Length: 168
Image (cartoon, rainbow, N blue to C red; front, top):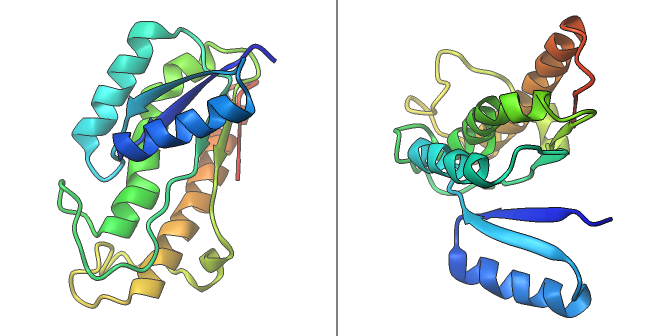
C-alpha cells in the first residue's frame, strides 16, 4: 500500500530485531523506528517532535502498548506504571499528534484495550494506586480508561464535524 510504518518502541535493541524480521517477510516495506517510552512524558514529547520534523500526515495511530500486572512501580513522572504507560502515555501521545491527525483526511485513532476493562473501576480516591495496590485492578482501571478516553475523543471529533475517527 506504499505506507511507511513508524515503529514507536521503548527498547531499541528489540525494535531493531523486529524491524529485521519484518524486512525478511516484507522486503519492500518501509518502516522507521523512533524511540518512545510511554512511561516517560518527556519521551512522548521527543517522539512527537521527531515525528513532526519528518512527517506531515498520520493515517493511523495505533495505541497498543501495555504493561500488565507488575509489582507496584511508578513512571518517571510519578504515576502508577500501568495507568501511566497504558493510559496517560497514550493520552499524551494522541493529544500531541492531534493536529497532524486532524490535518490527515479520514485519519484513524485505534486504542487497544482488553476485556480486563470489565473489572476496572476508575478510583479517583486512589487513581495512582498509592493507598492500596492491586495489580489486576490497576490494569483493569488502565484499560477502562482507554475505552472511556476513546469514546469521549470520538464524541468530540464527531461534534466538531471531523472525519477523523477514534475507535477501540
